[in-house]
Length: 52
Image 1 (tube, rainbow, N blue to C red):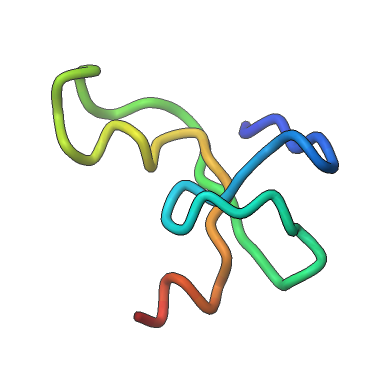
Image 2: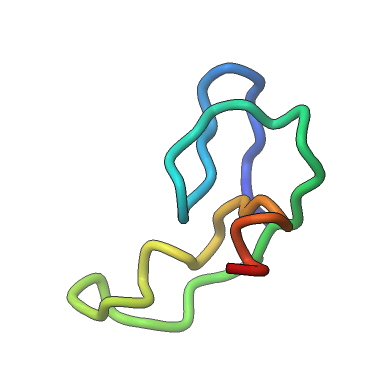
C-alpha cells in the first residue's frame, strides 16, 4: 500500500504534492527499478492525471 503523507507524497505522474484533488493509489511493486513503469508502483496518482 502506498504511504500517503500530506505535503510530502507526490503524484507519480505530475509530481504535485497537492493531494486535495481526488486520487487513487497503487499497491505493490510489479516491475524492476529499471523499468519505465516502476515509478507508478506503490504510488498515488491524481485521477485527473490518469485521464490524460
